[in-house]
Amino acid sequence: YFFTPHKLDHDPLLMLTWTISLSVVATCLWGTLLGALLPLGIRRLGLDPALLSSPAIATFSDVSAIFIYFNIATLFFAL
Image (tube, rainbow, N blue to C red; front, side, top):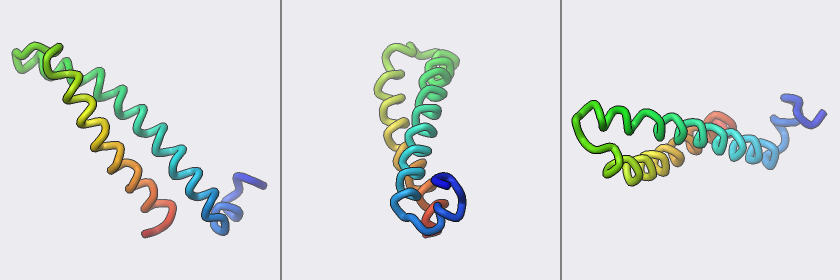
């Protein structure tokens, strides 16, 4: 009964729990994908991937994590 849609509609704490959980999962997957593909793109441009990868990955990952969180929150709370 805990994970039924009926319970999700009436419990804001459960909706917040799902929002945070899905945001963490999506952010980790996005950061991993970004960390794998950004060095390849930088190398394709003819630059040294070691110089730009770490700061760029951290910045893009942090900024996109906020967008991911707010998009998922908008879906759950219908803001």
